[in-house]
Every structure is written in C-alpha cells, then in structure tokens.
Amino acid sequence: KPPSVDYTKIEYRYPDPILHPPRDGEYPMLEPMETLFERWPQDDIDSPPLPFFEKLQHFDFKNRQHMDAAVRYRDLEFPFKVYNIPEIENAGQKWTDEYLSYHFDRYTGSVRGKMNAKDAKEKFGDMPPSSGKAQMSKDSFFAFFNGKNWNVDTLGEPPTMDTDLTYEKWAKHARYADAVGLASNEMHYYWQSGVPKHERDARESHWSMISHDLPSFGDPEPNFFSFNPKEAKGIQCRFGERGVTAATHYDGGRNMVGMITGAKRYILSPPNECPKLGIVNHRRHPSYRHSMLNFGHINLLKSTDEEVTDMPDLERQWLERSKDGMAIETVLKAGEVLYIPSHWFHYITSLQKSAQCNVRSGRHTDGSPEFGGEEEVTICGEED
Image (cartoon, rainbow, N blue to C red; front, side):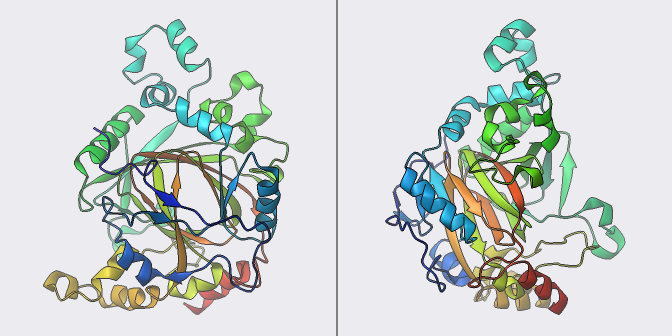
C-alpha cells in the first residue's frame, strides 16, 4: 500500500528563475520557524499545505543558463535546488528494495535464496557487496551523538541505538510505516550506508553499488556536484521511513544532497541564526555540531494540556528562543539535488520511505556577508 500522500506527485509551485542572485538578504527569503510549523506541523505528514509553494531557486540541469546561474549561487554560498538530472533519475529507477537488498544483504537476505548467483549478477550487477546498518529510536525524533563520548551516568540513556536489522527487514518496516501512517510516538528505524573516498581509486570492478550508480558524486575529477573532490569525504547515504526527523545540525563541508527515491522536508537556517538553535559546539560533547531540540514541539508552547505544561523548563526556554529563528523550508523529492552551503543548519523529516545520498566538497569558511559562516557558528558555541 502506498503512502497516503506521495510527495513525488503532489502539486508544487516554483519561483521564476532568477539567474543573478539577489543580494542584501533578499534571497533566500526566510521566515520564523514558528510560522513554518503553524502552517505545517511536523507530525501532520498527511496534511501538507497544497499546492506547496517552493521558495528556493530551482534550476534545470539540462539548461546551460540555469546551470551557469546555479554556479553563481553556489559560489555565493546560497542554497538552491537542481532537477532533471539523468544520473539521479536513473538511480531512482534502479533502487528497488529487491536491488538494494541484494547489495546490502548479499549473504543474509532472501534475494540470495530466490535465484542462483549467476542470475543475480546478471540482474543486479556484478559488484562487491555494500554495507549498512539500521538505527532505532523510541519515537520519530533522531538526535545525533557520538557513542564513544556518551556517558549514561550523566546523560541518561542514549537517544538512539544500533540494531541488527538487514536492509530487507528495514524496508519492510518502512513500507509498513507508509501503509499505516506510523504515529510519531511509535518506534522508528533509519538505515545508513556510504562509501569511502578511496573506493573510486580502485578498479571499477571493485566499486560497490553506490559508486557505480552515482558516478558524479564519487568522481575524482571536479564536476558540478563534487566540485572539490580533493577535499571530499566519500558518499553518505541515508534511508528514512515516514516521520523520521533528524535534529538540526551543521556540516563544515559544502553539501550536495541528492534524493534518489521518496521525499524529505528540509528546514534550513543560516549560520547567523545559531544562537537560537541550541547547538552544542563543545568538541568533546557527544552531540557536537548538533542540537537536541525537537522543533516540532514549538507548536506545544501555547498548549494548556497538563502533559505539555510539564515540559522541562530548559527545553521550554530554548524553544521560546528557537521559534523566532529564521529559516526556509523545501521538499526535496526524488530526482532533485539540494545544495546546502557550509555551516548552514538543516532539520530533516522523511515524509515517506526515502533514499538520499550526499557528497561534500571542502569548506567555505567565510560564508556570505548576509548570513555568516564558520565564525558565526564558532562564536555561537562560545556564548552558549
């Protein structure tokens, strides 16, 4: 059974292309997070505002003028999206659950028992097996942490835990989540994989499925998506099920995020909004560069419900600050790539079963005069 709302097919309205980036804060047009969540509450996945009005610039990969403009936006460290990308669309066609299960569960999944090795290689490709793992959270909110630095005595139980689910079992639960509209307070699972940068240094016969299917993301020669391959860190892939929400965080790298299947809601905030986001910037803290705040709770601040009024004082204080944080939202759907500049914060909700991969191309420390860069997130950590 498909999801109640398929975000790859709903009606979108896009802005007219602006080939020369507006300056002085006119792009992107930000609004308070309180406004974003009032218009579309985080857990109302089946009730999006329709049509959905996109505000980020949306460039056609096959249009030379559009791509020249995209480079201008990228050079200024402004976010934007690109669509009509054959490589991403082709990967989306190939990445069925059967195909992915063969590559991730080569020696454990049921695909191995359904056909002999020769037939499987002909159907799915003769490549080395891929690896990945599933994480579990007691609800839909996933807060990042470094397990090596997490102290249970002082911090309590960690927010997520690793599981031994195969990809096949994860995908079955993700399909179930779509079919029943899995509630936010139920257990959720998140599948992660990736390939190291050095994989592309080997012969092609040694490349795994991700390197084969996303050649531009791992190309050792510069291209639009991986434009500084010397400083790339490989390809990271995230497979989300309905409702999975990743806490806001920033990455130093200049990030190209390709949506292979499904769709996710991204809420982006610039570096100079850091003081309102509850970011942990102490390097030894297990949640360094991340927030532990569930911004979906912003809508609860005005509630008189007893359970809500018992919200911890510190969480309430931070959410009162966060609701005024300026941000822009976009739905990144299958076939599109989103550019997230260095040190821009991103808060992500998977709207349906989805697969997304990204590659980072070095750092841009200065950012932009309008929105700041590395200095703003560093100062923010020192102040808070």
